[in-house]
Length: 232
Image (cartoon, rainbow, N blue to C red):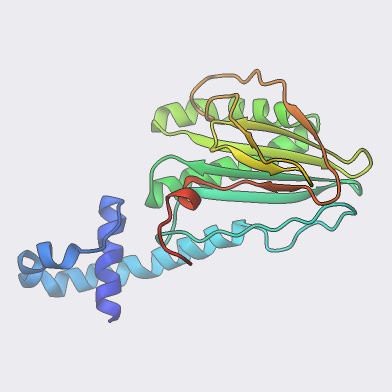
């Protein structure tokens, strides 16, 4: 029923949580206001759908092709819009940049801050030395004042791959541990060594280097990956 979907969307838009199970507890109190609520739904739904489309269009759908590495990324938001983001961009003809992040909060506020973080990392890529720690420092400097004012933060995992040296250079700013499984060896957790973006006014991470060999695997995900209980 499209009205029920709008009902849930209305709840997420104003309360920022999962609307499942809402109908039984609130349906009676809203019955008298159904005409005005439906008018509000009619205004909110197109704007939310547009916001979701804009957020979707910010995420890349094609990946750089380089010898020795294959990249894939996907996002499956729990609501119309949210704070998870990723980016994958070529660096010249021999490298690539990848970033995955998660903004605190939910819904529209998180989506707005997500767009800010996405833009800050892209700007850092154009203006800073091509090292993950320098990119993080630039983004932290750009975002700190705004994040403090908004009382929000963002975790981020940044990776730069160089095809010539077969190395992955990375930094983890408060993000969930990434999983690195070298071919033929045990898996390792790449823990955070920096706080999330927005917690401190500067970043001092030295960055880290992995030797990338055939058959190696790196998995980076947001907390929704580990929190999910659905089999699909």
